Image (tube, rainbow, N blue to C red; front, top):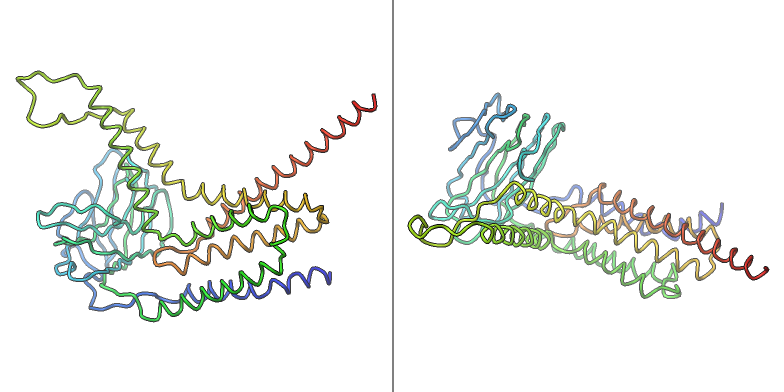
Length: 386
């Protein structure tokens, strides 16, 4: 028991710093308003464009789509919003049996849409939240950068699913800026975590592990993915999706029979996508959207497997494996908390559970490897004895 308490005491600084990081950054608002809200608790009279079954009662908007009905949406244009570089959108949303439509994004959503002088939509990151199924009230928010050339900005409430109802409440859109204290607080916590990392590198004797190089590279890959800006991840995902859609459209154009010279319109022929083409695009988009979760699973599975293999090569006591499992779970929680130091990412229990599932798979693979090795050695001894 004293041995366990001693090991826990050695890890106490990391546990305390983890609790401090989650507590402080869970309460600290890194943005501050710079002007009065552009939109706050609007009513139906404030909507500049509406579609489908949309109603409002005491500031709560209800967007309903009956089975086989048309999607519902409300747009609120905010004059002068393009004068501000950063805009925060905050609202509450509740859903009831929202069925996803044809596309992955066909569900209940809150968007901040930007348009140029010709009232043409400017592509970019614009979604605050996307919900389907049934879920209770949840507050969500996000901060968006206004793109160059933006003339008009709309806040849009949408229920684009094939059926179901979505409710929107406490809508607020306001211009913000990053607090000057954010850089100082982030620098302080970063220094504390770097110091803690060096401390535990020596305490856990990571420099003496048999597979230390592979373990270190795996851990650095996890930290790189943790601290990578969310904007980079989003832009890379959207770029891959756009390229896949372009290739499918090009294949559809090549399949199409050449039009007659008398009826062919000027310019390149517009591709006609079949249901199979659309399904391929949807499947690829879903795979790209799941890449983040898959990365968590694979990286922590390989880290756990390498640590256990290294412990086996070092002939560690069986109690060591339980201690290492705790350290790996602690490392997973720490990497999640470090996302709070970035500008546009947050910590999540779901990612930590994904890490846990990866570690469980690695542990099972490690046990299977040991059993297989033991069985092989036993069979070899039997064959030699004969």
